[in-house]
Length: 352
Image (cartoon, rainbow, N blue to C red):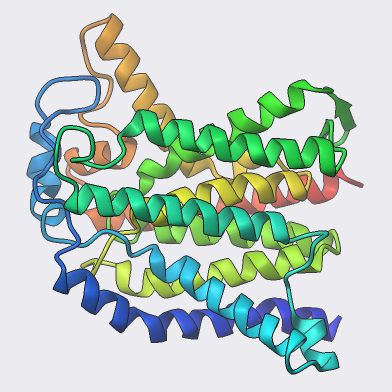
């Protein structure tokens, strides 16, 4: 038990300090090469001019670098490589026990994190430096969705054909067999998780929410004795907290697609590995609310010709109503903690 505690909490702390160490170097290059959008958005969600959004965030959008999410996945990658070297080149019993990468538990989420984050990094680069009709402004939403579907398809294939997973655990009831539609369900969950990525819109918001979500799944994995998954989640939390240290108001940088794409796709994989996918909407309620507010706004404007929210997504609506951005952020953090606890309790009690 002591070693497991050291593995989870020790690695989280270690990753945090690695991220803090990396940040000045990353920040230097983000500002040196002006890694921010060259122009603010002109169109609001669902059409029309983005008047309210630009009043709230125009200056930050064109002066604050993207790609701060590099700190998260790069710190995780460095920690993973350090322990790989320790285990394979300078083997020791302690290094072997502390190492969190294992084929049975963490290879898949680790691969998902790195692959999706690199894809997101490429999109950020295109958004900053892209020129011409097809690459200016990045890959575009449609292409990003196709890439998420592709990542989800690979993950679904691995779960269904390699891990022989064809059911979903329902708390208090047990496994519900769904067969081959599991593949489609997996992809849909990944798309839903990714849609909540628009939460990266206020200083400190995405980092605090994401850290809480992964901490919750780390707790679930720990109580399920999936210690490598728990440690992997803890390492992610350490990297996210290092990012958050510099993302709180006034933000030095934003997470960008390289952070959001990597974290949301990895979250889906973790949720399925811990058999806690059906409580994902509870644990990740801020992501759900953010995504739903966008969907509601689009549908309302398209079919009824009017807005439900002053501006979408939801956190910008609260800003438009006069809430200071820090109040929105901190209240989201509080709700994240509360609903993460509720989700954990449901899973852990529901499994008996």
